[in-house]
Image (spheres, rainbow, N blue to C red):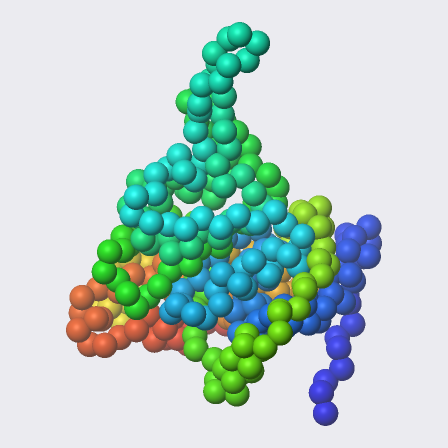
Length: 343
């Protein structure tokens, strides 16, 4: 017998936003139902992307070809009624192909430079195979991801809000790829791993995609709703013990620091920075809010440790030689970090 749906708990500070919170919690099943029209399985992946969108973070999706990464991102844009743009990253892609460029135009007999916006001017950007373009072009997204603006000829152009980048990369075919710079990796809130489906789910995918036309996804929210959800997440209170727990998890991944575990010193060349702790707390707030809770728990933080840390903890050659994966390091970090009493 399934457990009953937990009641929506709204503290006094949230009284003015009660309707928005209740609508968000009630719509969770509807979002899953709409995405289920075209996406089979991948529930954990969908949940993590949804949490990032509610918290206002960007997502890096790692998965082999043919796992419907592009379809998933496009479907999420439809559910949230967001303007969607797909950018195919290739070795010859230039920064101006992403941000836009200035061109000469004849206006009233005068020739003036006019800025033509690139595809980055949308609400949800799919940066497809982002690691197939050189670092110079990858860096064109850095300002957009961090500042939500682009600069052309010394003029700043604000991007439309809300603004998200969902980037994909193929972990299998590494020939002709360019590793993402650490500074850019750190801008992604989550690194979500999209794996192969179980056999029954794969049968459903093949059956569905070789039959009639796919179902139409109905929008459930607007861009204004998403911005409001961002504000709700930001204003949710969180106990100092939970914040300290998130900070300790991130700090324990840094080699050659006071109190760093021996296995980190042995296997890790670079650990997570402060932004990791920030994203753990923000993601924990979004997870609690989506479940109708007004407080963040240790379980909320632990549920997000892997997607937050897996692209921020860089293993050294010794770890590779010993066959150690980053997930093993993260598991040990969680097991070795003291849990706040009573949390």
